[in-house]
Image (tube, rainbow, N blue to C red; front, side, top):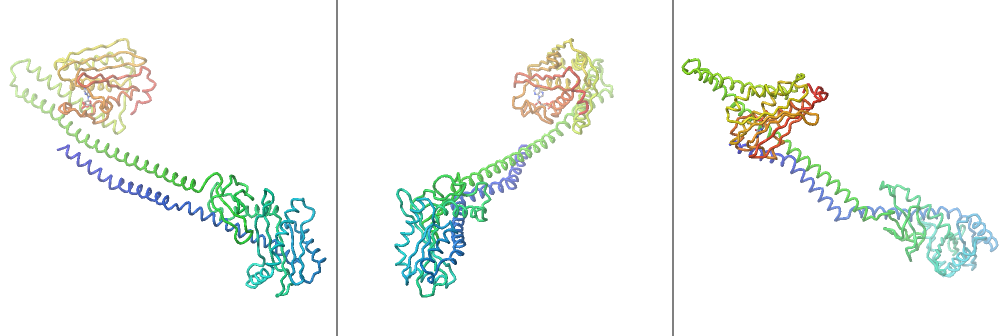
Length: 559
Ligand code: ADP
């Protein structure tokens, strides 16, 4: 009956646990795993970073166009017009180049008067001059044929309020090097609408490489778009030729050769490719790292959750066990109280009626009444002690005590009962023990509890041995039997309150499960400890060790 009750209670508890914690926890874990898998599949993180990178590159290109125009706009206004003669044109172009070192060369072309005048920066190194000359030569190859349509296109753009200059660019092989030729074409000021006159300015390649683009990169990388990802590792930028991926311009934090996202410049500075990446990592790494990070957080949370469920389960189980032990305890105690009371009443009534003839019978009856009332007192003392301990009110009265004498006198009142129950009783009390500070009643009760257990839990081999001796700064009090023994798995638990061994034999023996928990409490309050060595069917040995030094236990006087 009681087994069935336990089972249903446990099942009920498990069901409640499952409904209240386990199912929501598992659902949450499953959902998170699904969510992470889903992110991985659609590669949303990678796509988001790539989109960000594209935006940053687009901004780079836009800024280079704006910056080039900011430089060009005031210069265009100083450009010579069709009314200037050759000398004036040269002088104006030279003046522009002298005041604007960022340009490599300038060209003036007027179709009606067939004037083509080109000037380059003076007093520069031969390499510069050679490149500038190459640029001029290249420009002059297409200018006469393209000028008319170019002028028409520029006017149209200006009329529409669009850009006022057109950008061209490309790479030219020079020995084993590539040089970047760029031109900005525009219509000089004061040119009548139907006249084909073109002004051309070209940025110095070195200026672009060392000042113009690095500044733009810095601006872009510090702009909001690039900072959107509040990353401790900001992205790096690079510009290379459309023909190969050798870096031409790089931001300070660039390392390696290739970028992760690229964008060929289409509006301005044709022929260059903008490139961006995270230094020392790849987008795939970042997304893998993100997933790993999230999986590990999920793993840790899951572990915590499982731990929580396990702890809750264990606590509830423990509480249920305690509740069961308490109800067993009430049943056991009532039984233990009833038996001696019934005996006492029976023998007292018999005596009262005066029906006994033999004198020795009287003695027997008185002895039984005394023993039973002693058993009752012992039990009640145990229960009282236990309730005091539980309420934290148990106090010990330490007195200097001659332990051999205390043990002897305690056993004396029990010896008769032991021997009458057919036990071989052996006493080994060593007298070489200094006085020790103990609570006499508590120590005597501990010894009685142990002796009483030895009596109760022995079957055929009836033996009780009590020894008192000195060892390593402590006094040891041993109670040994050859009884039913205790399985190893239960040897720790027997000292817990209400605990009684699972062996069916034990359940036929009266007991409350309090004795050993009291013994342990008492001994610990004396600064000592109690140990058990036992083997099923062979017997048990309980050893109380009390320190001879009294300093420790005085601090534990009130428990
Ligand atoms: P009880 O009132 O049940 O004897 P105790 O706290 O004294 O309570 O003992 C707890 C349990 O430990 C007992 O129920 C018994 O199963 C086991 N036990 C204690 N002493 C012995 C012993 N000497 N031999 C075998 N088992 C013992």
